[in-house]
Length: 134
Image (cartoon, rainbow, N blue to C red; front, side):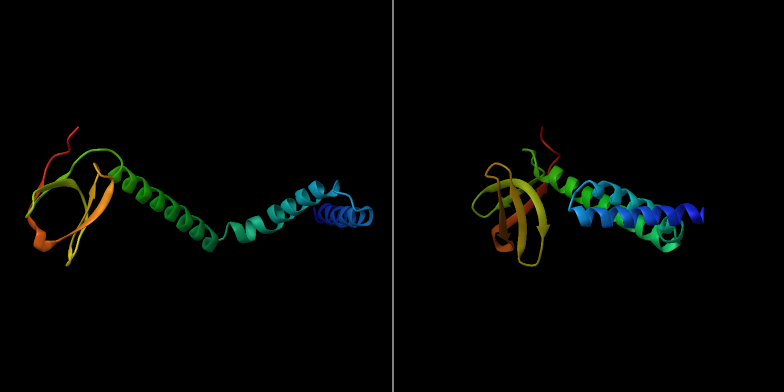
């Protein structure tokens, strides 16, 4: 096996030298295949399957899934014309979806106007949560 690897490494070096000498592109696919071969044969069992690498793969995969899930749930919450909350204001009534409540007021998404509004607590009399309308 060692002789086979040395032969393949030699072929890799020779193909790169020939490609450099003739300034051609034909050796690039061969060189790319050789680089992939070297990575897979030499480093796969040692580096790519170590406990630290497997933990890193699991961490990156879980971060990708969590980010995708958060994006999907956020879009599902904002897209559509369903009304989740009704706010009774001093001047009238506003319907929409509450995004966040804080010390200054309530951040609400109004699907009719397609805008996000910050309503101060002084302007709100009552917040009513209603089942989603279809």
